[in-house]
Amino acid sequence: MNQASPSKPQKLIVAITGASGAQYGMRLLQALRELPQVETHLLVSGAGELNLKHELGLSRADAAALADVTHDVADVGAPPASGSFGATAMIVAPCSMRTLAAIAHGLADNLITRAADVMLKERRRLVLMTRETPLSLIHLRNMVAVTEAGGIIFPPLPALYQKPDTIDEMVTYTIGHALTLLALPNALTPDWNGMPE
Image (cartoon, rainbow, N blue to C red; front, side, top):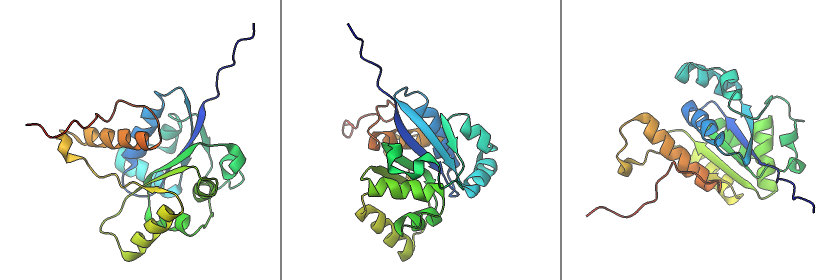
């Protein structure tokens, strides 16, 4: 009797760009390591690397240590640049306004924006954790363009109704919500059971 072969893990692309909020990308990678059904493919832009160092005192290598595979952002011929790569989803955490604009206008000028373009054209899940405030009309129009193309704009706003005590609690809750958007099981975001009496 033949045994069924174990299913391959689903490929998930995680990109860290130059917006403030490198902690979101790192916490996301930590959470994904707990999910054996997911194979993470990491992309870090040059500005994203600067923010890892400035905000967290970490390097690109520290982020890479949490991923299954890391790709050079300049390598637009890398596997995630093709629909045949078969990634089920991609999340940009955090997503700069420059990256948002490039995705909104189809400027596949690096592996992050090319991979995002692939996700949209293949009708696969793309989540952008956009970071900027206040938002200009240009930012808003770019968000609308990505949404109309099938992407999800997910600014990492704190859920204060959970009454968090620390920044880490706020970040963790947001990452749990992001994982739910990616259809990945997690216990980071408790179910809402209504207002207490």
